[in-house]
Length: 402
Image (cartoon, rainbow, N blue to C red; front, side):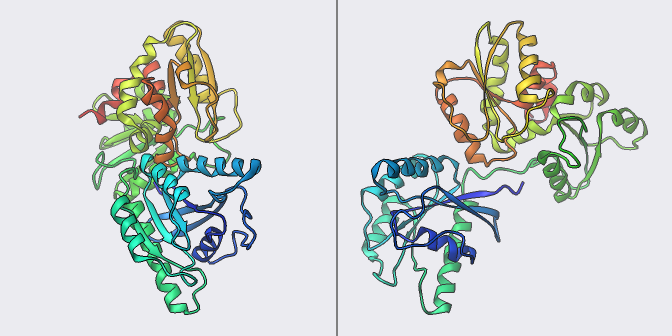
């Protein structure tokens, strides 16, 4: 899955953050000014980087901003940290002090790779001793850079070095998500993808996990058979060779399970996403706790995107109804969409259920779940919870337990 990688650009006011994004993108994306504090809210620029695919550079407000509004801007800047896959930390005049060290400590705590850039080196050259100290103490790449070099070839060379470091740090991250079918299929296999076309399906399109699944099947040199649930019985009556795997939209688990022969592995798109980018072991451990929910327990539903809710909405309607039916009791719910803050104390929840996370990166999803896991609160995901409530959890996860 070619997910957009988020790269945050941090530093003091007038350290050249906006200029850096402009020179990387080759466009005047961010406003550049000699006036400190020109960048107030995070500004994003999306582009493709060869070797990692789509990335989004996020220009943040200066970490040394002051005053009441300045403090709010710094808070927003720090909030971005939980959403990024790589940090570019700029400093100038060889001043790497408390502001920079505090940020670097935060990156280290969040296990975020960082490239340290001494910017505006055309004015004051980088102190090699400071750079060596940073490399030694923090294990980070340190680069001398300037956005205003007169020598075009030198400017191009330094930019190419920076891009190479960005690719290296993102590709080498332990949090890079695996492909949906990694280790599950081999060249020549056929995979049946069951895609219901109902009120939850976007008009004229397939949902992103289904599109990603088709592409990943093809990338593995396998055959993808795409159909709706009502086509399954006739497909199996007429197929000469059984498929290696059947993958279905979670809400059709029961119907699909009844039509798929016992000898054929079956799972859901959401379960594949849970394995590819979520804390799958925590999901496997947490999902059975559904049966421990009791009257009045509060459950947190985490959606990764904002969308118009319908009467068939999985997270807001179908899943709550199935859970209450399974538990035989009334439950209370909170739904938090996108990457919005969770207002309640995490300890108020008896369980947390995360959607597939197709719209966010693995790091963002893991950071989303981290407070609950650290607090010992069971976590699950949409597809695994639906499979549990429908009584087919063992079959839907069997392929991952071998």
